[in-house]
Length: 150
Image 1 (cartoon, one colour):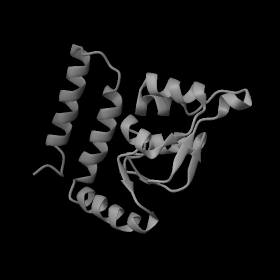
Image 2 (cartoon, helix red, strand yellow):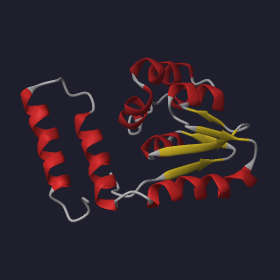
Image 3 (cartoon, helix red, strand yellow):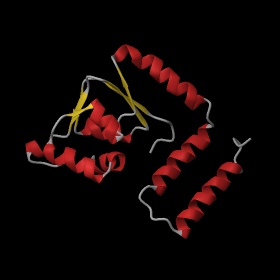
Image 4 (cartoon, rainbow, N blue to C red):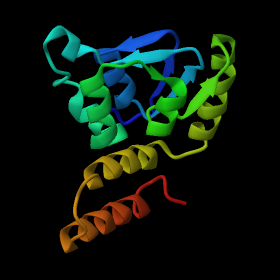
């Protein structure tokens, strides 16, 4: 995972690997008329390479629905699934939205942002345990003792 905050801007259609790339980003902004499709099963293959990223982003039940039906996913559906966080009317809105998000991100300590992303991914799908609690405490202590902490 990249330590920087990543934003995907979706206009038009995303298919296969494009959907996987979208799911790898920290945030996605899409034009309301965009759509995405995972149509590999129509071609006799499966979306194997991207499946971990898609499943992590939208959950197994939603991923299975998209994987096996190969139907178009609207941006309203994508937002409901958690693939898209913001929908805009057209691409002319992209610069203002990116600026708004970047302004919020710039106000954050870059090392803490990176550590928060890493911690989130490392905690994903982990059962609550003493080991997990120790990991999160250790990450917190590292951040508190870092140069960025005020």
